[in-house]
Length: 307
Image (cartoon, rainbow, N blue to C red):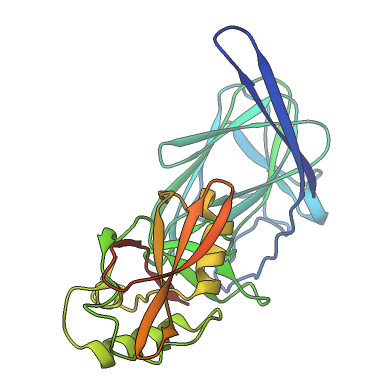
């Protein structure tokens, strides 16, 4: 939906400044085979659930389902789930008076309710998690349509890093490492060796990296550093292209841990006869700037991998 985000800054002397930005969020969900919701005619709790003070309410439900209802203050409902790569979010709806505190393991989120169904979705990493709802106030509260979904989004932890880009299918893209692999490393030992790493586009980092390593061989340089990287068992990391670095810059805040210094691109270009340079991208506060730099200069590296 449509949202307005406002930031307010107040100085020690009391001066105040603020700014707003309007955004529209579109979430695309793909149901996976491992889906859980309580609907039908059973008066028992969903399989695997434990509860204290909660019961099945067949008269109340979201989208024609029935719901797990509660009228007892500080009652709780509890379940656990093993989350795989294909189940990356938990989604549920709440309706009633008061508040519900939702816990993913020991992380707490307070869900404030009204008389309309409210939808909540939380991303979770792969592994086994405990989910708990604690009802805090009097009145009546309903939890409905609890499901586990595949839901990918830029900024979500995934497969060794953080999703930095999704294509139009919302199922493929590339992942950025969560931190820099070097604060300063060369692109190559000299400027005379042609690598033919000329792809600028998204998806070209793999071929560029392979061409650079084939031309330069073993050594300590940016492309080799990415190629040797292993994070959480994933070993297919690459030095990004210009367009891939563009996406890193656009989403730099939610990816995190970027410097305002320059980052190596995998793109090579000819600056003069028999002199090959490469591109670097500086994450300037006023915008990203591209430079053609000497290969023996030291710049930062952030590796990416495709999925």
